[in-house]
Image (cartoon, rainbow, N blue to C red; front, side):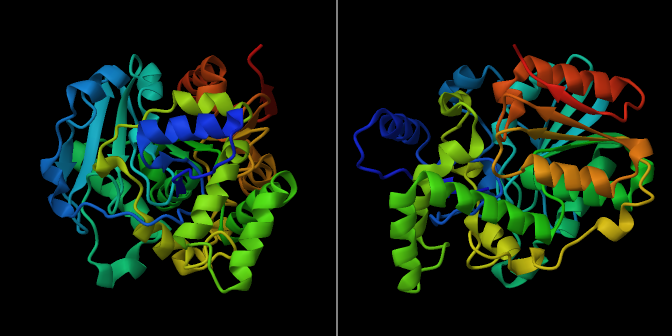
Length: 374
């Protein structure tokens, strides 16, 4: 998930909003599948000692447990997780790749009355352990799926439901394909399918930048002409000025996202670059380069909900349609939120969570639906 530090000097209202948001969160959390070009310093595995949320953090979110979770063992290190509520478990898999679970707070507390909501940080993210830098090639979709299995075993659940947002939908699907006997329901929310759809995401984001921000695009092309890749900080500072139009139907909704201000919750750009490569806003590389689960999807029987926002330039409705087409019609359905971008749970909150509750509790509905909060 891409992170930007906003540095535009344009004195218009849009820029003021971006600067205000930047001052609130320091390093901007963007849930999507686009890279951070701004490099950060990351906490080592000892970050597990920083598990207490400050009073200010608790007051912001209304969820006192955030930052007060526990650790589960795995072959790759300790996995940090939090739980909330009671009932059948729903595991939330965050985007990025490289982001913690923090942006799910406080929205998904809406599920806690009927479900045990399990928030987890994959290895390399949030408060979970990191891989040794020499093992960076092990940051893969399939390895992330094994974090889910390790946590399921540690918590003693036989079957779980999964919701993967943005990049998180890829390991959620990979897990369900490998361990279908342990999956009750699967939600793929604003996500990608494979390396090809990731490239579609990159191309869609660049299309928006090129056409809606030609003055910024010209500067980006000047950088590229001098050999600057999209992972460079100066590239990211410019590209970050386009992000509100990439992720939101209504850019004002950005201010509703939770940011803890804790460095442990910042996205890990090293993980992102391991997955996508050194020019991640231009060409898919890294461990994602040849990833494609489609050959295993034709006989998939786990009930699956594919959701997308009509105005999402990252996990586009086109990509969602391709995911739906790769799944058996008998076990999948698709929903398009007509007034949303990348996070329908923020822009159409009631409609999104009503749909989730119905899906987790009911049988199949195979039609493509349109949902719009009026």
